[in-house]
Image (cartoon, rainbow, N blue to C red; front, side, top):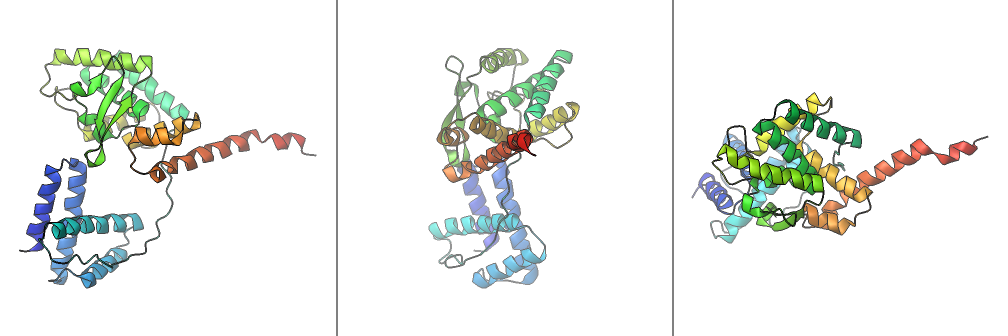
Length: 301
């Protein structure tokens, strides 16, 4: 059985497991890239030599260490599954070690002034054009920030996942891990409640909470495009993404003194080390504030 067919079986398994369309597309792209290269180089056997040559090829293409790590991880998880299902006898990744030094990349968070500008613009858009699209984007902005959820998780929320009385939303995260997030702000909860009542008048074809202007389920791409336009109209020069709102939520919570373990649980991180990267952002903010205040400068001779 050829590896193209085996990787297709793995892809179908991922779909059955309920992985996000974004993850499945990324897996397929990485595996197709690898197989296309193998075919061009006539690597018939998938062994350590092949993996080493693929690693060298990616370096020659000037891929970043993060991209190389991701592409290799895709192949590894696919081969792990194939080995577990007895489609292959031996996984060539056993004993295959790669040293890749990844640069420390801090998450990009929005400043308080930019966040304020976004919320003002979203409200203004609804007042100027109270259509379903503007209302959806305003609610999406609200939920992304107050709950810190991923855009894919946001678009998957169904009506039955929301308890308006308690302000609890059930979220299906990465790896099909279920968790709860909380809408504790009264204005945010009122906005959510109003939207859930109004959406019924559009006779939606889906039970997911967020809708497009046509009444269909809002997709992550729909949210990204409209959020980008919202930011541009708000006068924000940098490109704003939904994930930046997740970063901003985590940063603001930590700066307000919320225990990092609570932030970890809210964001759905399996390891607290993932959440700890936001402490670097908070420390950077602290340093900037101290530098601006600089009380020692008051006593310079």
